[in-house]
Length: 90
Image (cartoon, rainbow, N blue to C red):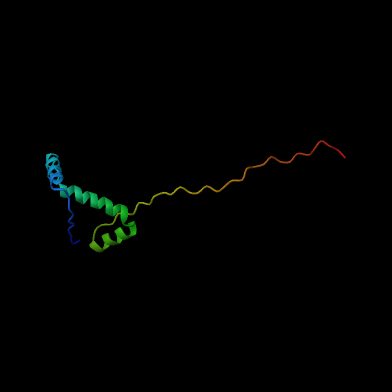
């Protein structure tokens, strides 16, 4: 799939500090940003659209994991005790 770029403004000193500390861990700002954008994509784009795009790009498609929604419980009416015959006689 063809790549595109994202440019965003960020404080120069904060970015320098971020790069310094990520490099100590063997990571880069770019790697972390790609991971963050991938997570945003997975969260925001519906599964069927992601699957379609994967098919278009020739990627192997994994079966979509369906979330199990709790089934609504049918409202149950309280069971009433059977009516007993009154002891009064007429």
